[in-house]
Image (tube, rainbow, N blue to C red; front, side, top):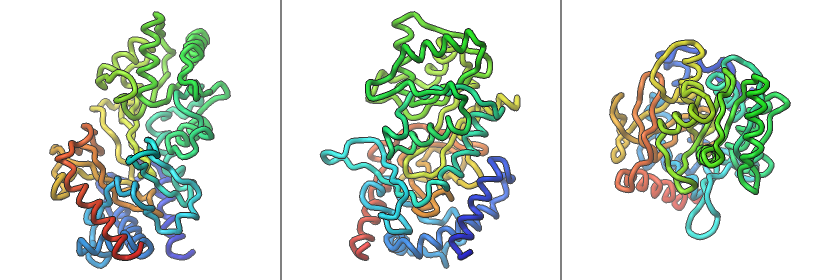
Length: 375
């Protein structure tokens, strides 16, 4: 194998070993893989190379993963960030939004979707299906063939393939959420004492809960039933606080908050983050809910202006380094506010415009690197 094939193989091996394969305090393996990934990306992505040079950083000067220059996620709206010709991408995942007007959609060019799946599968299984039981999965989102450029649609489709029983189905389409069909499925689950899993975006769950209130519907779903939501409800339906939503899941569906998992991810990342709640309940190791960082990812909280790392407990912008981004950009600077805790972090919301000045300047640097180098 050549150098990149070896690196790809070693990253996949780390993912295959699982979420708790190494001591979180042992940083040596991740550091080695991250530095080699940085060198590869610096050599094969000239725009990223020039972006790093503007910061006077190179593989020879970077000795630890925490020093690797991060690219703002908004840069993905302006140009392909890849180590390979963009037209060789197996799939292109795009952020939500319209392609019309001044708004642009971020695009993540995926060279090999199997690497995305190698990260996805052990992470989802650990946090949502630790009991390894197949069950009916009802998805409150588009099917993958209806939304082929959605990484979330692919993730949900793969979840059915890996963990769903034959009864699994989608209850969302171009016509919207089929609340009546979903309600009938919940009736059947209760009648048959069959645990089920519900998966979808937060706004469709809020829509369904409102429909249930209007129609006087509620259930006590069988023990072992679970739910995964992602995203937010802003701009779609009424806004609702996270704790209030957990209370409604329990009141209307009979799913306790410990069996409800929120997923945090983004198109620009090959890996996702899940709440610790369900797996902690499964092991009866009670701990505060937080997002868990897997062994092939590192997350920092940095100062919004200087990008200097902040100590645990202080609020700043979340920065992720994800080995699943082997063929794009390893280190990504987000616009999300968060705080580091234990083996993970908490998401506190989106930063304000004033807090994002540093990110804006960094995007300008990416665009300048492209102009200066014909990238």
